[in-house]
Length: 235
Image (cartoon, rainbow, N blue to C red; front, side):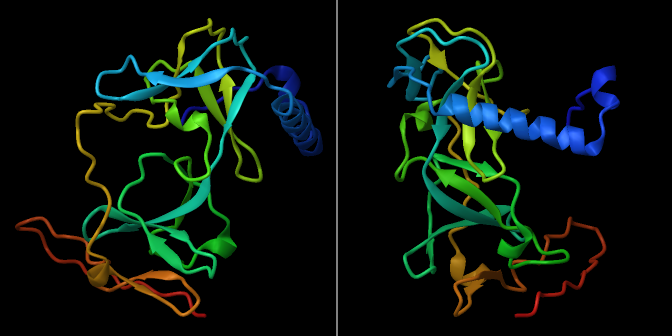
């Protein structure tokens, strides 16, 4: 994780002043979000194999809120035994509806403790926003190592796209949602677990739990087996 150095003036601020400054910045972003009026539309991406991309029909100044990545809340849980994810969304009754693709899901790594059915060594449940369901055109913005947009996640888990430099009309919009990862769109993803009966159970409350088989991390050939006990959260 990169580190941001504070200016001498900021380092002299109290904790309360820092919080007040951050709250003012968030309020300013929300106010700007309510007034953005950029003409965005989908088109053929310049990235080979990416298919559809997102373009602006109007000039965008640097530092502007371009749009919000909206959609349906989604969840995923890592299966240690396979290195793949079980993914789902909740139906009207709060029960999981499992997914077989996540093309337009923007995954967030933060999650409130009360929403986590795991503790200890269990993998954490991660949330995401599925722009393919009840989403908008922001879902067509592809990932690139030299983006002209960056993400800003608010305290209530809304994801805003902020322009990091001036963007001319008719240009494609990018943000880097996989920093440091290969962005070869010709590679077919293989990160979604489909053998659900082997690796998960669903409680009466709709919680997705891993089975003991799912928690068995494969051992390298010739290595010693070191089985680690894990504790479940009660309730």
